[in-house]
Image (tube, rainbow, N blue to C red; front, side, top):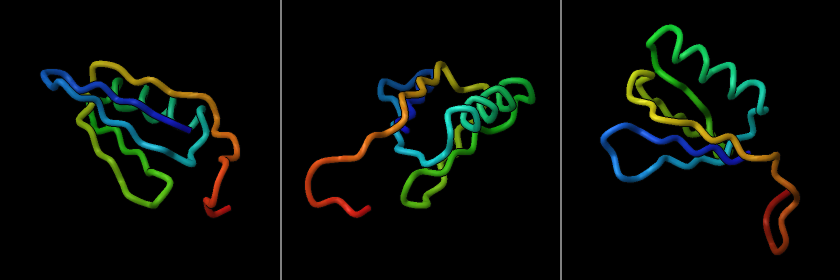
Length: 74
């Protein structure tokens, strides 16, 4: 699942590829907004992305990934 995070006062967005479900990501975003805490998401390779909740401008949650074409690992 592709997730794009816009950060205030920054010209670039953060894009991660996550194995989390759309519902889990949405719950984490809501929690970060409500508590003024940090948004914590894990990408598909196991890295953690932390973004301060008050600095988030927007979050775009893409559709679930489909199988790729080529020599990718499955």
